Length: 101
Image 1 (cartoon, rainbow, N blue to C red):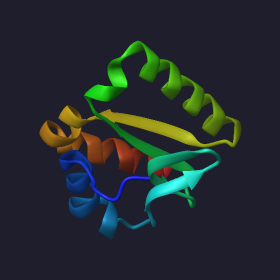
Image 2 (cartoon, rainbow, N blue to C red):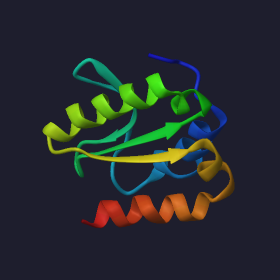
Image 3 (cartoon, helix red, strand yellow):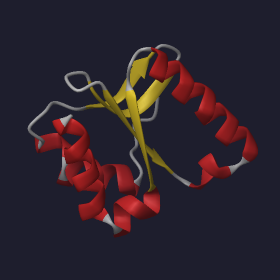
């Protein structure tokens, strides 16, 4: 579990999720995994992926992790650091849409 958030995680947390109309948790343990952000009310996991997620090994790990979480009915939404930092409104809109379902 990381105590220090990346710049993109900080932006998403402090500028959107922390005061969102549904409750979000940071660094939530789920099974053997720790997800970046979790909303139990809507069963949504948000992952913000940096460069380390784009190696073959990391992609395989992320696929296994996603499959594990989906077994429990969780919706996993992934964003890149770049999306959060440079397309913030679109990221927030996508989260809002997921929360409406």
